[in-house]
Length: 76
Image (cartoon, rainbow, N blue to C red):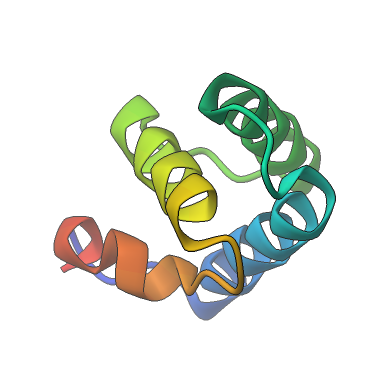
């Protein structure tokens, strides 16, 4: 997959930051649902695998998550 547009990366990071701050410690299913809702509101479409990877990172890190690093292998 080619590199995403900078605007897409910024939008994904904004959603990840919001979900991280509000859902820290929540079950992965809750985090994943909130990510999907936030991404839809931002008009960003990610694969199920990308959303799951972000949810796992948020649940595992319990702090700041860099969306670009989490998705680097998928984004090229």
